[in-house]
Length: 153
Image 1 (cartoon, rainbow, N blue to C red):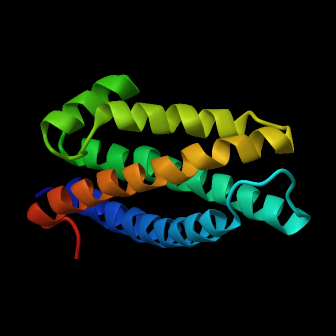
Image 2: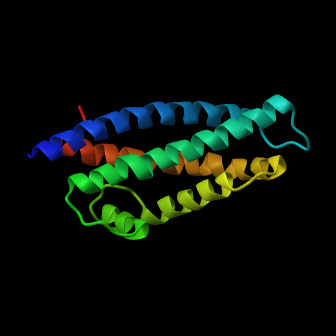
């Protein structure tokens, strides 16, 4: 193992811990928003909960794809490639569960990032709740891969 690999493993471990913290808060927000449910109108606090959920979803998805998976890709000494190609290769390696799901998660994250109307955000909440569990499944698949390579402590 090279010095660069050791450095990348340390970075990966830092990113992984941040991802685990982010995932935990995302799961708490999912549960809170599930309890709010679908209504005609929402209170300010309920809308804040939805906003928090969508923000945590986007942050967790970014941390996973842009930090953890990219660092894994570098550790595998794979050449730079477009995001979709990286995901397809990661799926073949069993580093992730589903490339298609991660593309859908990325699309949903982009919708959230570019949505400025509060009412539109509340319409995205059911998808965010559904895709949060799919995101977690991919993260768990990655954990298995990383643990097998002894890249996590």
